[in-house]
Structures are given as structure tokens and as C-alpha cells.
Amino acid sequence: MIRRRRKPLRISGIAAQCAMILAALVMLAPIVWMISTSLKPEGTVLSAQPHWIPRPFTLDSFTGLFTQTQDFPVVRWLLNSLFVSLSVTVLVLFVTSTAAYAFARLEFKGRELLFMVVVATMIIPSQVTLIPVFLIVQKLGWFNTYFGLIVPCLAGAFGVFLLRQFFLSIPVELEEAAHVDGAGPLTIYWRVVVPLAKPALATLAIFTFIGSWNDFVWPLIITNDVSMRTLPIGIMIFQGRYTLEYGLTMAAAVVCTLPVIAAFLIFQKRITEGIATTGIKQ
Amino acid sequence: MGRKRTRWAILFLLPYGILFSVFVVAPMLYGLFISLHKWYILAPHPTFVGFRNYSAILGDDLFRAAFWQTAYFVALVVPTGNALSMLFAIGLNQNYRGTTVYKVAYYLPVVMSVSVVAILWRWLYSAEFGLLNYYLGESGRTLHRLAPGVVGGAWKIPWLTNSRSAMPAIALLSIWWGAGGTMLVYLAGLKNIPRELLEAAEIDGASPFRRFWCVTWPLLRPTTLFCLVMSVIASSQVFGQTYILTGGGPHFSTLTVILYMYQQGFGLYQLGYAAAVGYVLFAAVLAFTILQFRLLQVRQ
Image 1 (cartoon, each protein chain N blue to C red):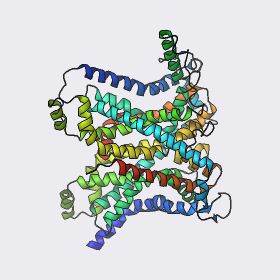
Image 2: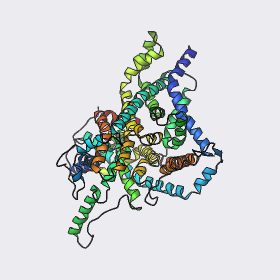
Image 3: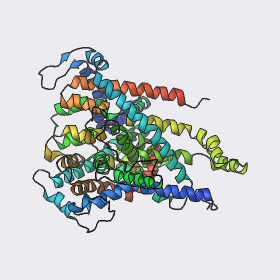
Image 4: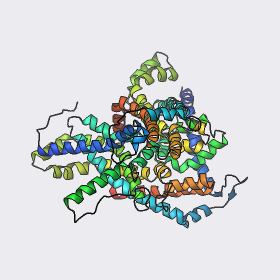
């Protein structure tokens, strides 16, 4: 436990807190403005003086967004994004946790070296290999498919690194006890390690979900059919058509942001502490 | 026993191993192979050209422009962004009342997609009805009222449509977007500094500034180095912001390397050339990273 002593009030402390409040307002202002604009009638959006509180308040932009379905299948994009992000999250948890378990607990030749190689690839930005990955996925026949959107996103080394570190911190005695009771590695992994690693798995899950939901470059190049787009690409196409209908485009932006903001606020503690312990941003 | 364990290890490693080989290792090697070819996507066969793609890149005026624009972007974003992140972290580390609320407010932009951020800032940057120009104009008018001779009338910046302001505008929104992520890393670094050291300095009568400069700053150095390196790597890959907001314009003033790679690869279908562009950028960033380590690493 960290002792928190209330500090005596000082002028410098008050000034610092005022600065922090001001900074918080500035950082939040664009997001508040986005939500505010999305709740205004289109006719009042473009005004010489900004009104922060929408008057009258309306959901027209949102209904408009979901009814313009011919050219812009917003619902389909939303479902695509949900399906892709959830699939990526579940599959990442599976493939990285099994690999991390092998690296942490199962002995084999060249284990440390192989792990080093996997971790070393984390410094290579994904953009560098964008073209070859695209060609490989195209050769697999996965252009414009969910496979193409999902499978290449499972190979990142971050999860392996994170989970291996966590598995190493679990007392080995528990697994040894299970081993003495006759359990094989698969049972130990599933019945002992996975339940104990729930906090780390949850952290990885939330990072993976947000990262996949927000991903822009990969879905941009691996799909070109409008019905295969994910929401971030979709809303970009959408705003290209409705350049000046800011009420509509902000509604689109809000729809694309709400799931991640909700996920973030629910798991706020886990996210901020997850970064603190791993030192790695999304 | 040993062989049995090895067999289990292979089984556990298999799913990730396949993915890692196909989508991480193979692309790195395959990319090098592609970059040595004239790889036009519609042509039946790629032709081997050796290092000619690389030599062409070094003589390519547009690539050179993109390279320096990217360097300009990195120079705008990394020092300012890191200073802001560090300031936020120092503020949070004081444990004032409401720290969690501040933390959430500073971090919230990070969880947004680049396309949301771009669409939102295009609205904020709108020349006639944008929020920024409105408040800028208001401050201009207020200043004008206070000191009529000094400043003239309403201020207005053609943020994204002027080749001089476009890149700083892209940098500004990128700083807003990313500051919270780096902030958390700095905060973790600050939490690792023993409180006793700062308290001892305080008892000895050191001012807050001196306490920061003589205790916090040197002890935070590994964190600072890490954050700078990661920020340079991340910001040199800038793509979404310029792709959505400016397409590289006006007059190539926001053409960045990855955007150029995208245009070459998926606009002109010159995949060999585009792959080579990726490797040239990677080599440049790697060299700069090594340089940063040499210059900033704690000497022992």
C-alpha cells in the first residue's frame, strides 16, 4: 500500500490543480464537441457561434446514419467490426497463451533463443511488412474475406511476451501438485494456469479488442468491397460523401467510438495499470 | 520423459508458431525478395532488378520530400508530445484529489480510432465554422480591444489547406491523440522513484524545481529514453491522419513516407518499389534509434 498523505494546501498546489483541470477540459473538449454536434439538428450545426449544448436536442443524425443503407451499410460495418474484433480477441488469447505457456514452463531445446527472436520482432513496425503480408494473404485467397481481416492480426508478439511474464510469476508448486496427481500439460494449462492468469488474460483481451476495433491500415488494404469494410474505414468513406454534414459525420464518429470508450471506462483500471506494468502502449 | 515434454511443447507452440512464421518471419524475407524486383501487380511475371529500386528511391525527389516531411512531423510531435506527457504524469503523481478523473480525461483520446480522430479534427479545423478558428478569432478580437495598435482584427488559420500550416495541424492532433499513452509510461517511471529521496531533498530545503532537476529527472532517464525511442518509431509510421485529412497535400506538404509507400503500392501497383520504401524507412528509423541509445543512455 502506498501511503497517501494529504498535503498542506499551498498556492503552488492550487495553481497546479487549476492547470490540471484546464488541461483535462482542453483534452476532453474535442470529444464533447463531437458528441454535442451529433445531437444537433443538421440546420443548427453550422453557426457563427458555437453552442456546446444542443438546443433543440435530437437523434436525427443517428437515425439518418442508420437509414442511408443503400450506399453506406453502417449496420453491416458495425457487425463486421464486432465480429472481427471479438474473433481476433478470442483467437489471440488462445494462440498466445498456449505459446506463452510453452515458453514459460515446457522445456525444449532453444527455448530462450526462440523467445528472444519472437520478442525482437516487436520492434519492427507492421507497416514495414505491409506489402509482403498483403501479397501472402492475397495468395491465400483471403482478399475481401473475414479470414483476411482476422488471421494476419493474430501473429503479434505482444501477447506472448505479456503472458509469459505473467505465467513465470505463478508459483510452480501448484502445477507440480497437479502433475503429481497425474495431470498432463494440457490439463494443467487449462485447469490450473488459465484460471490463475485471468487478470493478465483480461488485460490482453481489452488491449486486443480496442486495437483491433480501431485498426485502420490493414482493413483498408485487405478489403475493397463496401460490405466487407469495418467501421473505421466505413465512416471515412461516409464522411467523404457527406463532407459538410457535420452532424451526420459526427454521429458516425460517435458510433465508432462508443464501444471502445465504454470498454475503456469499464476496464479503466486494468488498462492504465496494464500499461504501467508492461510499459507498452497500444 | 524429455522427448514427451518436447512433443507437448511443439503442440503448444504450433498454432502461434504457424501464424508467426507465415505473417511475421516470411513477410520479412519475402519483402526483401519483392523489393529486388520490378513487381507490377498486373504484370504476369516480376522481373529481377537487383538493388535498382533502392537506388531509384535515393534519387526520387518525391521520396526525399516525403522523408523530410516525416522527419519534420517527428520533430514536431516527439519533443512536444513527450514534454506534455511528462507534465501530465508529474501532475498525476502528486495524488491530488480526483487523480483518476484527470487520468481518464488525458488518456481518453488514445482509445479512439485514427479515422474518428481525423474526422473529428477536420470539423474542428474547418476554416469558417470550426471551433479552433472561432476561439482564435475571439482571442484576436479581445486582444485587439485591449491593445488596438498591436494586433489586427480576427485571426484565422487555414489549417489543413495551406502548405505551411498543414503539417503543424496534423502534428497538433497527433499530440492530442497520443499524449495519454506515453503519459502512463512516464507515470509508471515516476512511481518507481523512491519517495524517500524526494522527501530527503525536501527536508534539505530543495525547491520543487531543484528536486525535479536533481532527483526526478536523472532517475527518470531510462523511462525518458524508452518513451522517446518508442515515440520516434511510432510517429515515423504516420499514415492515417495524412491519408484521411490531406492525402499528402497541399503541394506535398504532408506527404509522409508510409503514405508514399501506400500510393506507390496500392495506387500505382509498384509493389517492389513500395516494399523497398518500407525497408528504407525501417533502416533510417533503426539507425536513428541506435543513435538515440548512444546519445541518451545512462553512462555508468
